[in-house]
Amino acid sequence: MSEEIDFDEILRKYHSDPYEYVDIYASHTGKIRFLVKEGDDVDAVSGEWRHIPGTVLFEITRERNPQKVTATTNGVVSTLRDEFEGRFVEAGEKLMTIRHPLKKKEIIESILKEVLSIFPAPERAKYFFSPDVQSRIEKKEVREVSVKPGDDIIIMSLMKRDTPVYYSGVQGVIHSVYFKPGVSVDQGAPLIGVCPSGKLPIIKKIINKVKAEWDKKD
Image (tube, rainbow, N blue to C red; front, side, top):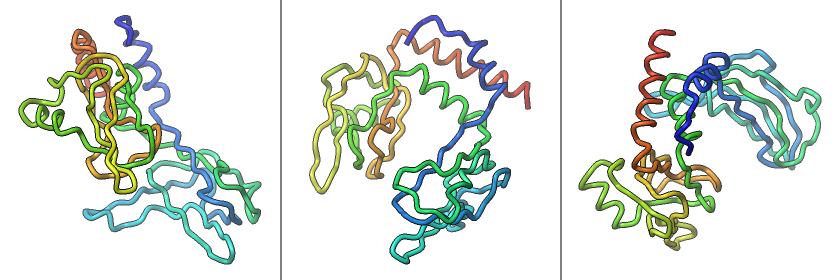
């Protein structure tokens, strides 16, 4: 992470395009029937108990077994591959893109993922902090817990087997935690974001500037 961070350029980017573009793919091979069109508003799952399903985006049928796929984020359908309507597609085929409007908190998180050293999940599995790290977190704030390359910081739980995961990023303090203990994380998704101790003032400056800029905008 460079000390030279162009705050104005970062803010300019999010002011001009304050969106996240979420691509939706076919989960498996099947015949596609779209249930939305370009320009449609879509909603993610909601409700106090997350009992209200998201907008149904499309139906994919394989071996006469139709499966409806719902939105996991709110926004607008910005692009849709309508040439696939009524056709069979392969698993992993991109079907549409949802333009999700970013809230101030989401913009801060997105910027942090650009400037922190991100340590990703090596496999799709459930993750927990190692007992030593968890004990340190419980005794003080997570952002006061330092890690260095080679540290045994996380336990990966996969197929009823727990395996230690050794940290391989920059030395620093754990600034952001992106996983919830015992909840499955996709391979390559961020687990933690680490900031060298001397760079914490820079991170705080980024957060404060984004908050100030978006408060003025709002």
